[in-house]
Length: 109
Image 1: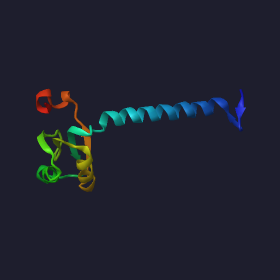
Image 2: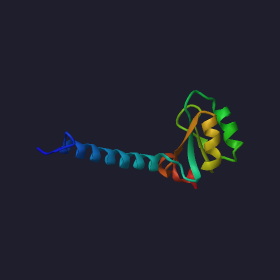
Image 3: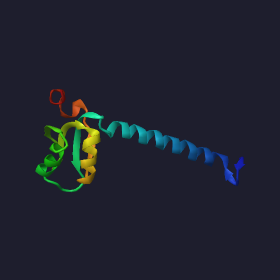
Image 4: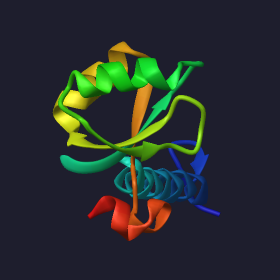
């Protein structure tokens, strides 16, 4: 078995392949979750928040309400990600991509 700097060569390759696999997985996950620049997105509060409070700050950022989200305090809105992201972070919420199948195509049209 060959060594490389005192380590087994297969160990170095295993770490390299594992690191690349993790990076690809992270990018894939991010592309699925990250909302579009503009369009439908789900606002999910990270700690308990009333739907009214979430709606207040979302509407202040010119978001258009499309419906209630699946969790308490969450909302489906159509908005610009750049404007809504700042408000979401300052209010302890995250934005998630909303596929058409999630809420029904007629809601997102």
